[in-house]
Image (cartoon, rainbow, N blue to C red; front, side, top):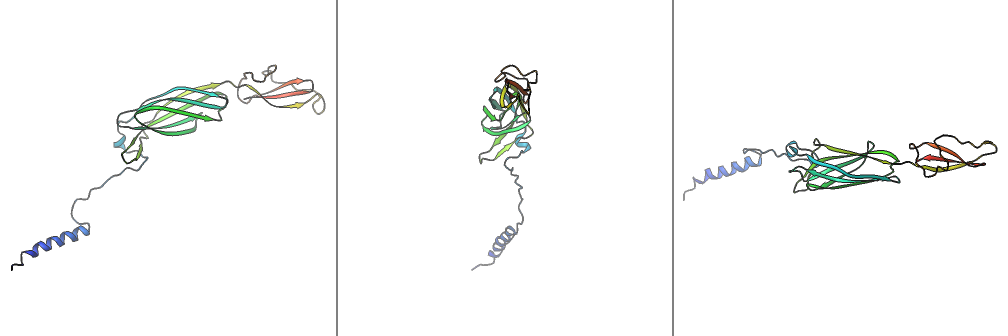
Length: 205
């Protein structure tokens, strides 16, 4: 029986196993995986928000509502949106697709002119659900919305006797029966004499 020729084959197999276990020969391939939510330059190359429009915006009794449309360039399949009112961030969202409609509403809005700014960035969402925002491809638009301020009754004071023997009535901008009438600007006070013994305090709100 011939046994010698088997030795070289066994040595070759054993050597290969040892080198593989030790991380030996072969070419190492470095895989670069993008962290979710960050920009990868080659992924975002050429991607933009091609259209960002405010279709309408309004305020009523302290609430602002607005809507519009957006479109991203081919290669992007979502958009990130940010909404700011008078420079204060009021909301963010992400919408999936190549084009669509956005909606925004918030409360606590003062009367007078208010500036709404909408910012948008293209996004790529891969098949595994990883989301990448192209942070350098910013597009923005804005709209100014104005709601009239009106005189609002906030309190009253007794007068015509001590400690106020004379009922004060000041601020020439305070009209007769001011309640509900349009006033100059948010926060202005107005004191109006209602009866010989009572003056009402109004604020422009």
